Each structure stands twice: as structure tokens, then as C-alpha cells.
Image (cartoon, rainbow, N blue to C red; front, side, top):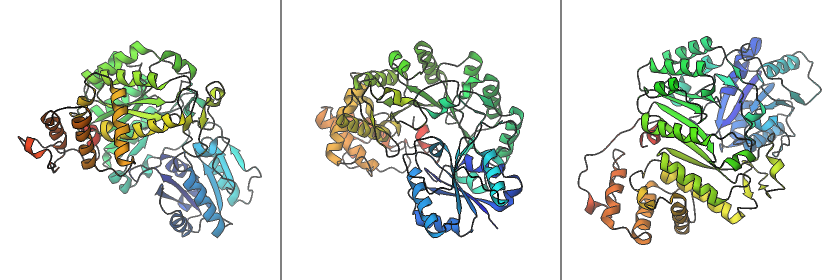
Length: 500
């Protein structure tokens, strides 16, 4: 009998929930009564409720995040309508911090904080007939050396089809105001030897896709060196993703990073802004010289794929300032540059800037900025479309050879802004635009708006299209095809990284 169901809505099928597996691993005597069921956002919520209730659980634990909050609220509503006696416990970042901007009132209990210990204790008390009186349960930070690790509970389907998430530490030493990780200032490291044993066990089971969720992987060099050595001792192909801070790459770490083969290593680097004064506004340390040196090193001396982040709408930063940041990053790196819109999450201290900078946010997830004193609502809408088209054209890697024709004057932001406005005028949409349609739009813009000659555009565009084996050359490019043999095939999971 499954007295406990642990569930959530992942943002994609390829994602897996490490949180549910932590809860499951630490259920002790109740583990044989528990089951993990994962869904994907935008599934039919009533069908999800049906699948959960098929097991007739007494307790349902739901991991709640910014991307699934509305789905969770709907699931909560449906289950309480058809099975009001079922006890529902919400946890996770979106449930942990007030105010709740999505209605979770029908939940029986809400766990605020790390749930591995208190969720077990809550289940124990409920089964014993001693249900807590307080609906809100505040959890203390757990001792990460004392909880059981979740990795053995990734099943064979997870290993074959999903990212396998790992963490070596919890907490963050920085106080960036837009980030929930800044609340947990104390860095806590899991037992390194035990972690390495778990990694080896996953490797032996066939895991080759590892995503480390540490916010600052390279702050603890003992751990970073040991984990990197683990992968360097293995034969590729494999794929390891780490979030790193951009200003801390000691020489020993640099030498290790140089040893990784192509398409095996991805580094997510939160830049957010290159303006020192703007960074001070949000309590973000910014060692510009060191950051630029390290990005240059990673770009020129390693085969690592970088994923850099910029944020639109930071307090005090104009679009002109953002444009300078983008232009500069494009000069030092050819990797992905994610353009994100500032979000105000409950629990952060961003609201202290609301009055001074006239910050106006949506109260609907993902709680994104609608306007401020320097960026109007209309401009913010344009930037959201800019970010989407940037992802489709630049970050996708589909037009690496062609896009430089757009900004031969090095003014990346200005030129791409103009292209973004033009594409939206043609499509009236940022979604469901095929790769063929994107290629044609880019071709037409470069030809008719920028004034490039057809052959000048066709040659790099054909090179881009032929990166993917089996791609058909559109009729408008066929007169310029010289060699159809330069095809490439990429690892099915990581085509995007390989194209960079």
C-alpha cells in the first residue's frame, strides 16, 4: 500500500526531481509505503490527480517551484474536491517563502525550508494520530552529513532519459538580492568520500549525464578538484554541468579544465551585469578584471561550453547599459549568453528597491519585471521578445557563421534589437517558428534590410544548415551550394553545446 505519494511537475520530461528522492531516501520505516510520481508542467492536471489517487495515499507531498506553482495549485484544488480526506503537504522554494502569490490555502501543511527531516517527522506524527496543530512547519537547516543521499533512487528510466542531478554542497557565500540562495549564507559540504562512491555507483549504472546544482561549485577547491578528477579518470563521452563563479579559477583548476575533451563540460557562469555600481545595488561582488581574464581563458584555452547570464531590469540599469554588457560579452566569448528578465521572488530583499526605482512586477509566476523608472512596459515587452529570438538564433548555435554579418560594426545589442523588432513584425509571435522559417527570415533581413549580397549571406548560412546531418537546403540557397559533404552529426542530447 502506498500511504505516501511524492510528486511534482518538472519543467521538462528530461528533468528529474532530486528533492523527491531526498524525501524518499529519508523516510526510514515509511519508505516501503511511499512512491515517487513525476509529471511535466502543462500536463492535464485532472489526469495527474487521477494517477496519484489511484494509489489511495493518505499523504501527498508536492515539491513546489516557480515554474510549477500554478499547476500545483490546480492539483491541490482537484484532489481536495474529490478526496478531501487526503492530507497534502507542500514544500520547496515556492511554498517556503511568504507572501504566497499563488493560492495554496487548501494545503493541509506547508514545510518551509529543507524537508528531509521534518517531512519524515510529519508523516510519523500523522500515522501515529498526533497530527501537528500548526499548518506552517518551519524546518531548520539539516546537517548534510546526517541525511541519506538520494542517488540510488534514480531508476533505469531516469538514467536512460533524464538529467541526473547531484549536489556537493548547500548554501551560497554571496548575498545577491535577486536569488533565494543568498538566504542560506552558511556553506555546508556533503561527505566527499561518500559522494565519490555515489558518483562511481551512478557511473557503473550507465549515467553519463550529470548536472551539479551547487550554486558556487568552484569555491571549495578540495571538492572541485576531486570531482573534476573523477571525470578526468573516465573515458568520454560524458557530460558534466557545473554552476561556477566567474572570478575564482586558481591555476590548478585551470589546468584541469584544459584537459576535458570537447562536448564534455558545461560551465554556467552568472554574470548578471558588468556595471560595478549596478552590482553594488544588488549586493553582488564584481571583480571585473578577474572575470574578464577567466572568461577569456575558458574561451581560448579550454573546450568547455560556457553559459553566461545577463539580467534585464536590474535596479538602476538602463537598456543602454545592458547593451554595453552584451556587446562586451560577445567580444570575449562565443558561448551562450542567456538574457533573463529580473524576477522578484518571495523571500528575497529586492523589494527594498521598489520605491526608489519604481519597480513594478507581475504577481503571476514567474513574477517578472513589468517596468521600472528606466525601462517602460513597452520596452520590457520588446526585451522579452529580444530574449526569445536571441535564444532561437544565437544561443541555439544554429546560425553561428551567419549572425556575425548582422553586427560587423560590433554593435551587437543595437543590431539584434532591430532584427528582433523586424522579425516580430513579420510573425506577430515568438513561438512555433520553425528553423526553416527562422533561416528564411534572417536571410531576408540581411539581404533587404542590411543590404548584404545574396552570395555573401548564402555561404555562411549553408555552412550553418549543413552542421546538422540530413538538413535540406532551401531553394533560395541552392544556387550557392558548392559542397554537400560537410555534414556533421551531434550527440542527440547535446546538439546545442556541440554547435558552439
